Image (cartoon, rainbow, N blue to C red; front, side, top):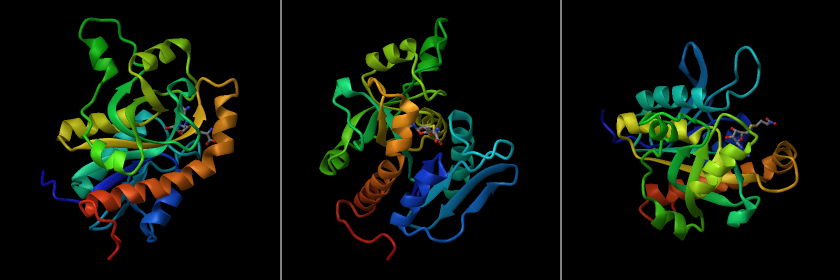
Length: 243
Ligand code: SAH
């Protein structure tokens, strides 16, 4: 596969994706990636963005790992990207000095809830997928470099927290590792860019924090994605990628 294409951003929720598309100037209508799946893509020569779309039966965003993998597969086949970025909101950890609105860029990527206590399968379950080293760009932009860990639950039982402490997770989401696994199969560079909406180790309920902070975090995500795409598209120069 020719990997000369633009960077590809993969997102789970339409309300997260709308401000990102606005900041990147992706104003056209999205195109279906596959007739049987709700995923949509916005493709331009400079940048592509795909969202998992609305679940046909439940009428909500197709969040969590399976739709993320399917969308990533279809979008890679459609756009032959040079880099894939899993972008979205995430939970953070106060005890690792996380804060609401913090922008995190991955340098490791795990699953924290695939508990398979069998020789060999335990490491397979954890994933620990290849992540592109973007620490120079990330640090320049003031993003926090660290582990992004994914699971199929919004809550975090103690056993998951323990795993995330071991991997020093700074952003807990529901999609990044699934995107990373597909990228590994294609040998396409991968990273994840996440903005913190809620602190997992706070006494306030995750769902309440998420709802309260979601809109502001998604706006911040729009700016952060734009900054990152500008940097990597123009080798350090901030120019308008639409021109
Ligand atoms: N109840 C929400 C549903 C969002 S679920 C709603 O009102 O629509 C959370 C989504 O945001 C997932 O796509 C996930 O990747 C991300 N996310 C944000 N905070 C998270 C957390 N603490 N744990 C897991 N995922 C989180």
